[in-house]
Amino acid sequence: MRLKLTISMLSIAVFAVCSQAANATTAGAVYTLSNSSSGNAVLVYNRSATGQLTPGGSFSTGGMGSGAGLASQGALALDSSNRFLFVVNAGSNTVSVFEVMQNGLHLVGTTSSGGENPVSVTSFGRILYVLNEGGAVGGVDTIAGFEVNATGQLQMISHGIGLSAASVAPAQVSFNPEGNLLIVTEKNTNKIDIFSLNDAGVPMKRSIINSAGETPYGFAFGRRDQLFVSDAVGGAAGAGAMSSYFVSTDGTAHTLDGLANDNQSAPCWVALTGDGRLLYTINSASGTVSGYGISYIGQLQLLSPNGVAASLGTTSAPIDAAISNDSSFLYVLAPGTGMIDGFTVGVNGALTPDAQVSNIPASASGLAVR
Image (cartoon, rainbow, N blue to C red; front, side, top):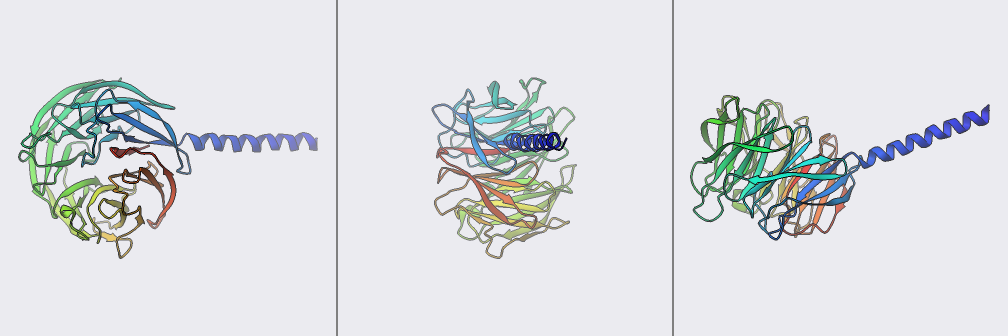
């Protein structure tokens, strides 16, 4: 009886270990775009429960990349259920939809972006919006909207909706948490566009506010209708900052905290933890990550006096970041060194390096995590 009990307990222990190992290999994935001008592709890296990354394949988008950085945030976006992945093809003026599979991606289709040089996408429910940067000098910057059906096919519902002017160098488009507003940042004009949507997802009204800082770039929504925007300040050395705003669901907005400096250069990409307590911005010119604590009323406080929560190296040229769904891991795209760098996010916001993959192409753009 004792022998049978020992064997039984050993079997249970082995099963538990194997189950844990299986779960560790299926925690999620990290996605980036090759953005190659000879054929765009999504590069997939499987993510374990401990944050480690392993190559998961390359999947053609059916379109072309630009061959260089997109100067935007949100070149890829997952829907809220992590069923579909939307990506831009800046070189062929299209957007592709993938169905997320357990072991990779399935291309659903590729559709015209409704403009030129798409650089950012965002989804809410059944609605997808694409930001078109306009291409050549004098090109018209626009947003275009699509309805996403049950199989991921796209049907255009609006297009040719311009921003405040031509050639504003827009950086990102994103829904607010309620899905009734679209936000677009304009780097050249220092303005932020707020589009109010009707029940069908079509813009009915637009308001434009002045950014609290110069060169508003990437952004993310936190709790209580708070919007956090990076201010790249034209890349001026040590002049980078973050700004926060209250954006009401009726489209009105006001500044909560203007110019919370990070003492770094060219903060351009923003990622928030799910509980709305911590924010990270990626300083492209400094090769660093800055961390902020967020107060209940949206004020920002640097986690370290010098503004450096993590250093990626002076040649890293980081250009995007994303946080895992459980807020345990931060991933940063650094094409300058051909890396995706991963960090464990501590309860106090400290970043501990714990994952890295290499051979990322220099043209890579965008980052999404599940």
